[in-house]
Every structure is written in structure tokens, then in C-alpha cells.
Length: 123
Image (cartoon, rainbow, N blue to C red; front, top):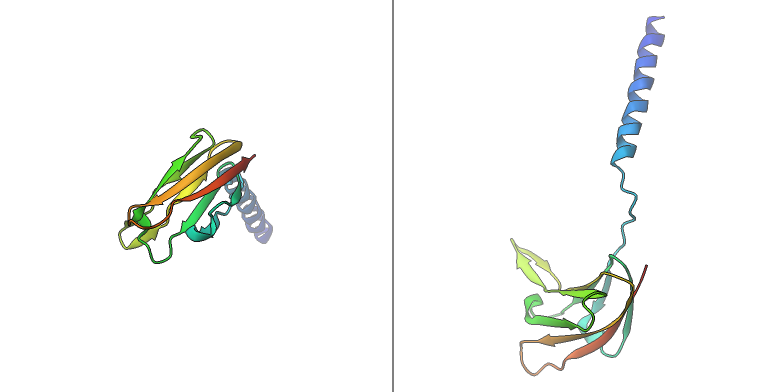
């Protein structure tokens, strides 16, 4: 009978832990970023879903040398690249709401052509 009591307590503890963990789970799915090279974006269309990010690989150019202009700031926003504590963060475009917008990337390191592309955001 003592073994059953301990087994019952264990089962109750496991059930309680499962309920606690289930309460911590987020119902929003995690959406992986889309990664593209800056040079491959010219004239292209990038499909994203709300909350997803376009991660722009800048190659040999500094991540903080790019600037972005988003035509419709309600659909998407440009996120500048930067370095922080030894970590490097690429520039990108964050999808905010369904729609379509044009993005123009420029680089302060003169002599580099602007990169213009379209971002299509769906739910």
C-alpha cells in the first residue's frame, strides 16, 4: 500500500507538471526567417507571412552600411543591421500586415547600385 501511495503521488505530480507546461506553451507558431543575399533581391518578389523576417545577407559589406526605404510602412519595416557584443545582426525587413510594398536598399559605401524589390505579405 505504501508503494501505491508513492506511485499515486508521482502520477499526480507528473500530471500537475504537464498542466503547468501546457499553460506555458505559446499558441502562436514560430515562423523561420527567409534569408537572401542582397545581390539576389534586385527586381525580385519575396513572399513573407505576418511576423516573418527577411534576413538580408550583406556578404563582404558591413551589415550597418545598408539603409532601407519601405514604400508602405503599414505592410513592412526595414530593420537596420548592427553589431552588438561580438554578435553580427544582418539588416532585414519585418512583415507587419498583409499587403504588398516596394523596398529600396541603398548602401552608404558609394558606387553600389540601389536594390529594389517587392515584399508580399500574407496572413
